[in-house]
Amino acid sequence: METKLTAVRRSDAGKGVARKLRAAGKIPAVLYGQGLDTTPLTVEARELTQLLHGSAGSNVLVDLMVDGEEHLAIPREIQRDHIHSRFVHVDFLAVSRTEMITVNVPVHETGEAAGVKEGGVVEHHLREVQIECLPQNVPDEITIDISHVELGDMVHVSDLVAPKGVTILTTLEDAVLSVVTPAALRVEADLSVPGEEGVAAPADDEAAEAPEGEGEADEGEGRGDGEAQPGAEESGEG
Image 1 (tube, helix red, strand yellow):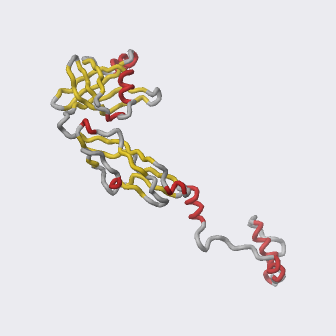
Image 2 (tube, helix red, strand yellow):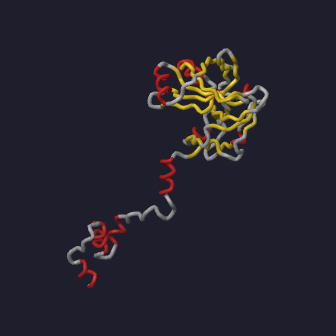
Image 3 (cartoon, helix red, strand yellow):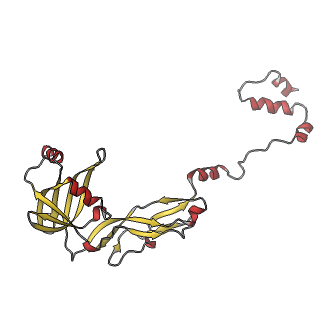
């Protein structure tokens, strides 16, 4: 379903002009593609914000009205001012209903992974994939149910199911997400390397049977101050 947006041609350009337009509640834009000359435009900031905040996001199909002439287009090269949370410029690509386009769409998982219930966490590798389809077939997102994913398992692009009429172009072997042991637990496990657990302290009866002077040597080592204890060398010589 397309959304209508009205735009007005503009002849002026430059940073000063752009600032004045934004101050007046308008956003500079450009229309290009499909044999068109690049056409500078302005659109209402409020209408553009509503358009791009819809479920389709930047992949929304737009009936762009320019001086009474309608152009089927999709937003491209969207520039934002993240500090003030506003759009500052947008390019519109004119498209045809009968020609394929290439866009990126987000991947959205549903369900709770079995591995999460076992203490794991979901680690994301790809948030979106590249697809090819007709403009009217661009999906808002591609979903995948991860409830069956166990701890240590990985979901690949090949596991995604594309809607009818949509071809996924991203490499099928690429990882989308995995369920892994939390980082803190992985570090703890790495520290517990066999043979490096440390030497257990001797039992009381073992300490009592130790030869005279052996226990004193242990105490001297345990101080950790790097200084020889009085009489230590004499004991060693004796």
